Image (tube, rainbow, N blue to C red; front, side, top):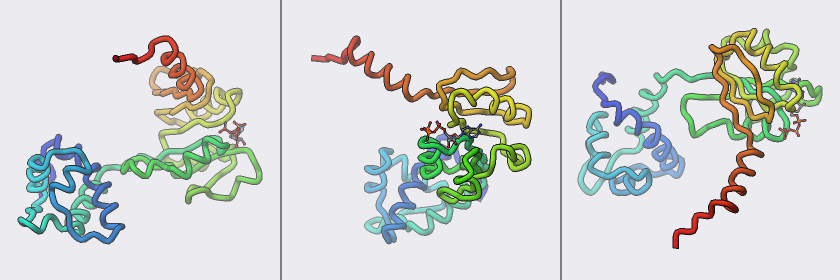
Length: 211
Ligand code: ATP
């Protein structure tokens, strides 16, 4: 089927449908009604029926949709989305958690390699992601253009410089360090400690007292 014909709003809901149907499939369910789907993904059932009609999936009254058929369609369609490969630098507590989590709910980003200095970690893998020595960064990056930084703060800038020299275009910085990069590199900074402190501060000083 010609994918250009799927409206953008419908296309945006695909990952949502896909995730839910995948769960159903794992539970061994063969079919699903638009009402069930609607309650699970919080999209009204008329919209779901219209969306699905674009995929050539016409639900039968009293029968619902064939889960396998839909999954096959979604797989084909979503797979054509390019997967962005991501590298993770620093396999400490936080980095390890990310490797286990690995954004599985997100169909188009994936951590594919990790780097550390700790000899015990190098050569192992966590959640299927291989861990290399940071000295081999440039050699092993091969085409990866996004990096997650979970190293100690005092290492953040020097590793950033190497990532920039290598040619990454985006860095998700989880260290408390403010890092400096050339203008063309995008950095998103998530300092979990600051976010938590800020939440507590707001609770204290701006309570959501709606009564
Ligand atoms: P976290 O901060 O994630 O809770 P942690 O407390 O376990 O981690 P940190 O000291 O913050 O440990 O270090 C995080 C990870 O970064 C460790 O696995 C450490 O070996 C690694 N690391 C330290 N220096 C570097 C470096 N220059 N390059 C790559 N990895 C490094």
